[in-house]
Amino acid sequence: DGGITQSPKYLFRKEGQNVTLSCEQNLNHDAMYWYRQDPGQGLRLIYYSQIVNDFQKGDIAEGYSVSREKKESFPLTVTSAQKNPTAFYLCASSNNRGLIYEQYFGPGTRLTVT
Amino acid sequence: AQSVTQLDSHVSVSEGTPVLLRCNYSSSYSPSLFWYVQHPNKGLQLLLKYTSAATLVKGINGFEAEFKKSETSFHLTKPSAHMSDAAEYFCVVRGSPGGGADGLTFGKGTHLIIQP
Image (cartoon, each protein chain N blue to C red):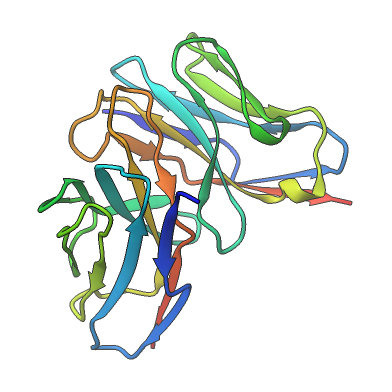
C-alpha cells in the first residue's frame, strides 16, 4: 500500500531535550511538508522540501530543524529552543505536477513535552 | 494574498438530516479548493477538490461542494448525516500557482457533531 507513515504515534519528552519525528513516504512524491496543529488553529506550516537536499522555512520554523537526504524521508527535529512544543505534528507529501494536485497526509505524531 | 474562512467552528446536526459546512475564500488567482476531513488523532483525508472542470464537485462518502465564484464560496454538503461523519473538516485554498510553500492556506476547521 502506498502512503505516508509517521512514527511514533505518541511521544513524550522532558523539557530541554531534542526529539526527532519520523516521516516516510512511498508515493514517489517530490515534495514533503511538516505542519503543526493546535486546537482551534488549523494547520501551520513548519518546513517544506520540494526536492532532495533542499528545504525551506515555513511560517513557524523557529525551534525546528529538518533534513532531506532521501526522497522518501523528511525527519523533523523539535529542539529545546522551541518554546511550546506540545502539539500534534502532521507530515504531508505531494506530487507537484500542474496546479490541481493535493497533499497526502500521514497519521500524525502527538508530542507532549513536560 | 489569499485567505479562507470557515464560518462555523462547530456544527451539530441529527443523524439522517442534511449537513452544511460553510467556507469562503479570497484569492488573487483562480483558485484550487479542497475539503479535508480529520477524525480524532488521525491525519487529514481528502474529501474532494475543485479544479475548475465543474462547479459542483462530488467527493467521497456522499459529500459534495459547489464552487460559487460570485459569492467566493465553496460550501460542503451532504444530504443525510451518518454517525461516522463526526469529525473535523478543513477547507483549503491554493491561490497562487505553485511556488513557495505550495501556496496552501488552511481554514481553522469546523467540528461536525452528529446527534443520534
